[in-house]
Image (cartoon, rainbow, N blue to C red; front, side):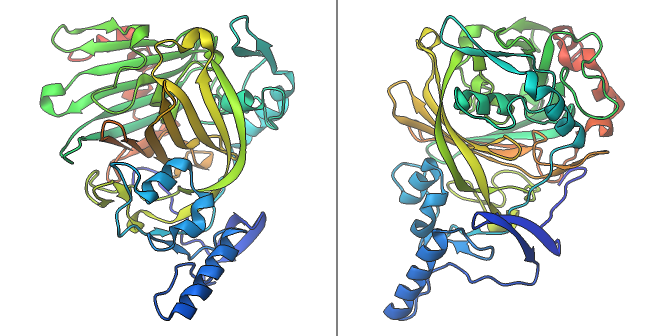
Length: 457
């Protein structure tokens, strides 16, 4: 894929978390395949019993999940993935689906981020707000709640996701978005994505707070580069260290050659014609965490595609159509330990809000959202969202799981739409931290509203 992409599937030794313990897996070992055979009825029964037995403990690397045997592994799937296999809705699994299971790969969090966790997490406190929401004080970096527990365990997990480790600068040079309708016709656009963390930085050689950016936590800049008729449209979003402060959004309009603020009432409006809203950005969650109620639903293991190779040509090449599911050529699926939480707005902010609830499957190691099941205001299933991440090498840090580079797939089962984001496609570079060319290091250009006015100059 892009700069620094690392695929670990060929390592001689991989650490994998299976069967409830840490296992060292040699490359040449060959665990039994869990697929059900098609010989005699006796052999089919034996294979089915084998599947049920292994599924109760874990899924051995080397197993292939198909339409014929998926039910033996449904306990390792989010509800939305189960629905796709069952074929309940317009969007359903292709008949030829193949999910090849590999070892679980754990990339340690950066040393400085872990040091900040150890130093500061003990001083983080939860504040209960009058409107029923929650806030925190005392946060200065790292994971705010390294061992989330009650009370407010679900909200603590969401706060860990909000402040999860991300390189302080991430530049996706060719972020592709493709939008599919119920006739399976599609259109795509592409642009440049620039993410920057301005406060609570832990990367070596970087100030904890970027000079001149006091009060800002995180910015997301997107500028369309193709097709030509949409070129120069751009968005900037700013999140603040004060979690109660609403996110600011600005849009540059090429026809006017200036930007204008986005209305806070547009939080549920589709973004760039996609099936996402501004609440779904930043790899699956960009909502105000002080305005939500979070229920902790439990812990489990789920299948997720991580540390894979992004398709070089983008959608629809090398996607299993019509669903747009990853093909085996992308890489191996992993069994990941996750927290499952249910996120909904507190009553004061619920009226007119797009989602009734958001069930999130959050990786217990790096706190990224791996899968989400989104429900409408009446509690009906609305969208399924998968976030598949390649790993990237951050200079001076090593491989990181969360670089805001991913294939994000959203299936709208009510409106029969789908959206696929590839950030970036596999033949385009991604720059992390000091890898970024000098023009992307310009803080004013990519993190301030006035920087939008520099477009087309």
